[in-house]
Length: 345
Image (cartoon, rainbow, N blue to C red):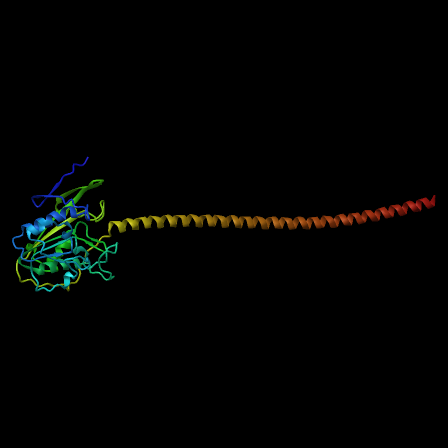
């Protein structure tokens, strides 16, 4: 029996799981306490930006006490009081923030809308590296010595169409293609070990693991939503950073999502079954055609025998008639002979 706990360990610190049911139980169980701790412990909080309207659903009076309710929130799609419906990528680079937080948002930037139709782009043309460009944009918007905390689904590199699940190779492009200094990026990962829902709520168990141990993790399997997340922390080392977004995409292998692959396998099995049934039907059809041909040949043979029988019957009838004629003639001759004999007597 699983031993459920109220806390989890992350980056050498214990946190209480988020118990608020809104959009839970998902990665929100660990993202929310980590994000609030990040905002509560940063040294400079003169200007704070949140990309994606997430934390407002979990706030209370303590947020105001900590001085984080005055942050600016930008969300391109979610219409809420206090939310600026602006595109992160259109924010001017002249704007600088001491702290930026973004929870499970950047993986959707530049991708299709979510399946429910609640938010997201409608355009068919997607940029598979748009989430990386969003992180580069966040780094660009940081003031010198500014800090950012970003969470994304992590594990096997997956193109989910409405999201990109990050991998270690994908994150490597932040420095290689987009110029963020390696020493400015810190990544720690958490994996969902187990989860259960009850009438009273839910229980979850998350564990901190190395990124290399998560290379097999898939979004949506075995649990719904992210089964592992990467917590990315950025530290703005210098103001001498030039944002470059016009970058040729790297030739990475993006895996098929678990749900799509499962549906594909089911359709493949159904196709194979249909093909097998079609082959069996064709075989039965060939057997039926063979039986028909045999029946037709037998019918032709029977018809031929019938015609021969009818011909023989006609010949027999002709011979009978000829025999009857001879008999009649013989009878006539006999009667004539008897008449002559009678006259002679």
